Every structure is written in structure tokens, then in C-alpha cells.
Image 1 (cartoon, rainbow, N blue to C red):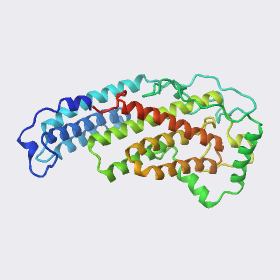
Image 2 (cartoon, rainbow, N blue to C red):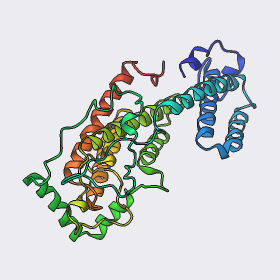
Image 3 (cartoon, rainbow, N blue to C red):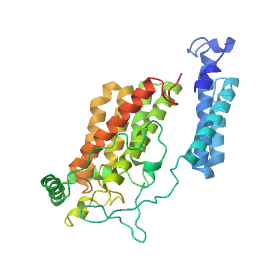
Image 4 (tube, rainbow, N blue to C red):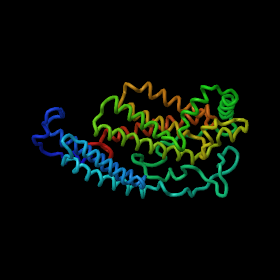
Length: 338
């Protein structure tokens, strides 16, 4: 987008056409932005979903043809820039470590999490601490302190709270746990917050450039929050509630995530996402924070997290977001529009 703006040069008569209402030179900028987003999106989405390549190219053509009066030269210029940027993003994705397999050692003993799999034992998302972040200086930058010691009074109190919830779940609590499960086959937790962002974009009629900035900062922040979250999970390897008390049941729709309990991934991700969205839509902070609270409680209702998992995860997510938002605002980010 930085290069797209630099390329937005002079204007001509069509930029002042009646009804466009975007000011002198605005038509070029608008079309270049649209083309850049279309080109970058087509390249990245084709990498992720290669079987959809032709359909994605058809969408680019449809967008170009949707311009008033037909395809605009600036759209093609923006598209070329977008495709180049998309190729850079794909190259980064191919070398950022996300596809590497987990090769660490899972500890065993009292208080340690137990993998759902054997021969070998695995951990979902185990590669995340080694993935290159967008903003963080290291995966451990905001690592929280340890959870309560296994067997301590604080731990027993937290475990017993989940046991009590398990023994007396209401239909409402099961509904909340099910709504926030957001597991495989759904938009996932990250997708949920991206949809919340989309709703805000539509409600506030953000421009192409503003919307792109929101999506980029939101997605990169949530990604870094998950890197930090899994760093903590693989530092403490803390036992899940149903493993600490065999009488704790898990809501079926939630399932048993195959990674350690502390801190909560849902809470890390949700708190980071809500914090970013609150900077774009400050009047919605109370509603966004309420969603974060409910997302955290849902994991307790589901029987898979202690309260201290939730509290620590939310704090970690907010810390990551504060860091990324500050870096973005200062211009110290590849995502910052100029």
C-alpha cells in the first residue's frame, strides 16, 4: 500500500466525474487501492487454496469490470503492485517456520499435561514458539509467570471451581461453551474476530485502505498473541482440568484440545483481537470486552480451563496488542500505511 500511494500521481478529467465524490485525484487512488487489494488477495488465497485459483482470478476480473465506465488503468497498476506484495507474503509464509513439525520433548509427571496421542505424543500447535512473529521481538517477550503449583491450595480451589461447574452446568452455560467452541470446521476463533472487524468496517463505512489496515493489524496481532501463548504453554506444560480430576466432564462440542492448559489460547487471541478493534472502534470497547469475558468463561463452562488460565491469557493477549498497536502507530511496522 505504501508503494500504491506513492504511485498515485496526477489527475485527469475522469477523476472529477460527477457522482464520484472522492475529490481531485481520488478516482486514481480509489482504483489503485482496489486493484492492490484484489491482486494481493488473489495471490495469497491461491497459495492457501490452489484448487480455487481460477475462481479467484475471475473475481479479480469481476472487480476490475465493476469500476464505473469499465476497467480503469489505475486498477491494473494497483493489481500489479498487490500481486508483487502478495508474492512477498507467500515467500515469507514458506520460510516462517509454521510448517515445521514439533520436535521438542513433552515432560511427564504429576501436574504435567498429558497428550491425547501416543507413539509419539504430539501437541497441537507445537511449532508456534518457533514461528517468526510479525511484531514481537521474541516468543517469550510477554511470557506470564507460572500457574499455581500443582497440588497447592490455589490450584485445588481453581480445580474445584471447574468440578463444581462440571457437576451443575446449566443449559445456558452449555450454550455459551458450544457457541465459543469455534473448532475445526468453523471460522475458528480468529475468524470470529475478523468477522467482528468486518461488521465494524461496514458500520463505519471505512475506506479500502482503512479496512485493509484494520485486517492486517488485527490478523498479525492475533497471530503474535498465539505465538506468545504457545511459548507459555510449552514452558509450563500445565495439566488440563479433566486430567487433574477424572470426574470433570467436557462439553462434547468443545472437545479436549491437544495442548497444555496454561494459558488459554481462546483468551490470548480474543483479548488481543478485541484490543485492536477497540482502537478502531473505541465506542464499542465495552461490548468487545464483554465478548472477551464470555469467551473466557466458555472455556471454564466447557471443562477445559481453570480461571487462572483465562486471566493469564487475557493479560498476555492485551500486552501483545498494546505492543503491536504502539509499533504500528509509531510507523515501526511493515503494516503501517504511509
